[in-house]
Length: 135
Image: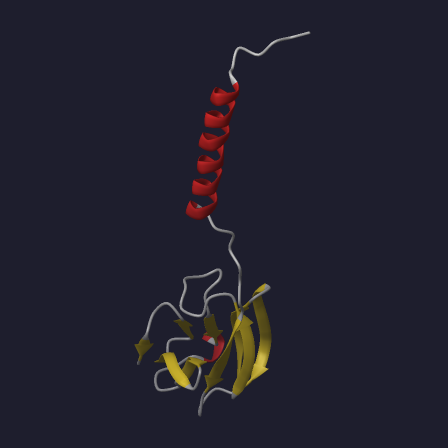
């Protein structure tokens, strides 16, 4: 028969310390629970008829190749106003058709509010939910 060098009082004290340490770890590092939110991405132009579009949803980055403009989609994202990869983002590329004055606008709309809008004639434009920008 083996005997313990710890008294019952010492065991209770050790159990109390371990319980407190475990509770502290749980409170300091809570489990992450995602609640996807709906955003609307738009790409529009009066001058360009198609663009290659990249956008983010809860599953990752997606593409719409040679998408006809105007283009619009509702997408669920992990955290609307966070940086990628969990935040909202939309990009349009039309470099082969780009020239001065051939504007394309990309937008992120959340709960009826435009979070980001970027209008360029350079051949690419992007919006990120973390950056409240209207151009």
